[in-house]
Image (tube, rainbow, N blue to C red):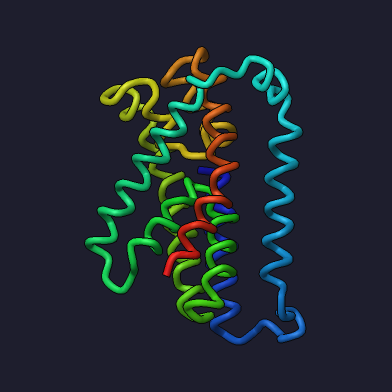
Length: 209
C-alpha cells in the first residue's frame, strides 16, 4: 500500500495541475510521451537484467515454469473480454489492451496513450490510458489486500497470479507469507515473464481497430 499511495497522489496532482491550466506549454513539448515511453521500456530491461536471481533462473529454466504466467495471461484476457460486454464505448481490443497491463500501470498507461493517439485521437487515447492506469492500480491494491483470502480459498498460486508483474517485487512479501517461501522463485519468474509480455500484448491490441 505504501508504494501505491505516492502513485495515486502524483496522479491526482497531475490531473489537478493540468485541469487548472497551471502547466506551461514549454513543459509539454511534442513527442515527450514517446520519450517517457522509451525510458520506461529501457527501465524494464534494466530491472530484468539486474535482478540478482535472473541468471540463476535462466540456468534452471524449465518450460513448465511458463505455465503459471501463461494461465495468468489467459485468465486476464478472458475476463477483459467479458468486461468489454459491460463497458459501453470501448471495443474488445481496447479492454484487452487495458487488461494486458497486468498491474504495470506506469508502462501500460503511457504505451496505450501513445499508440492509440494516431488512430483514435488524443482525447480518446488519453481517456483509455487513464483507464489503464486506474485499472492496474486497482489490481495491485486488490492483490495486496486480498492475498490471504486468495491463498485460503483458491490455493497458493492464486496470490501470484492476481499480483501480475508485482509478484516479483511489491507483492513478494505477501506471497512469501501466505503462499510459502518455496513459491518465491515461481513468483519472480512469473513477474519477469509478464513484464516482458506487457509491451508486446499492449502493442498488439492497440493495433487492432
